[in-house]
Amino acid sequence: MKIRTKTLCTLLILLLAFALGADYYDDVQDLSGTQLLYGLRDLISSNTYSSYNGAKDFLYQELDNDNGQVTCIYTGEVYNINSDYNGQSNPNTEHTYAQSWFNPATGVKKADLHHLFVCTMQVNSSRGNLPFGNVASTAASNVYYSYTPLQSYRGYDNWQHTVFQVNPEYRGNTARAILYFHTRYGDSLVQGGVNMLDTMIEWHYSDPPDAAELTRNTALQGFQTNRNPFVDHPEYVNRIWHPEISNEDESIAAMPTLRIDNVYPNPFHSKVNIALDAKAGDSINATVYNLKGEKIYHQELGAGQRQLSWDGRSSDGKQMPAGVYFIRFSTADSQVSSKLLLIR
Image (cartoon, rainbow, N blue to C red; front, top):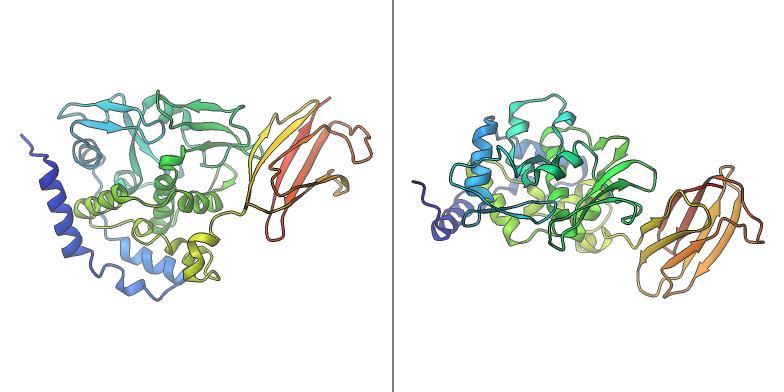
């Protein structure tokens, strides 16, 4: 019978952290940009474990097991499992970097626990190999939850791509898993017509690593020899993809200062409602363009106004024909856009 006391687990993690992790990043500390990306790839490419069944045993019985319970990353649903369960029914195992994206497919990728999580079977199937992203309208999307506040969504983004939006509590965990996978193996972040990079950076900083994620990282180092660098050093994300941002300002600068939270309904018939998130005090200019790039509507939103409704008319009150339009929101230092589809 296996011994799984929290005291022994904690002691093991502390010993591993001391023995293996003290100087883990010494060789890359002064790097940035692509040099840091490739330096980290060399550093974390030590994992060779390729038994998927063995990885699942560790996932369910040790890594994410809390006194005989495991939790779905997308819904927060808690499952009681027995001492030999390894994801053979419900819940099962989610590859955040979908297996169909592997290029090339290898057993090491499939068994890499840095991107494997416990997941409710139905939600795992619904997510499938959809790219991660922010849905344009939560009201128009499929919602996944199980009697918890954790709600994940499957729906269209602002460009009409079907995406999967992870609940806020595990959004950062998912992003760091995806960024790890790309860094470790070089597989693409462009999937299903969606470049996930900007969203993964946004999610990474909106939900930073916590103590549980650091503990998981160390346990994984003990099991498969490598670590997720973005859990240990969140600032590495900007040092790779936005090296022009100073170290002191990284966590602040990575957060978007202007964001479209919701566009509903879209397509729309008589009125579309758009909710925004922006820095306090920012005034926002809203401009609608047709496909020719002609400006047809403009409105300035005051410092406290964060929602706009457009009724499909020009600034002089003329009703616009059915078709595709673009709305752009801008502040002094940021801008975002969304595609709108007007039907008659």
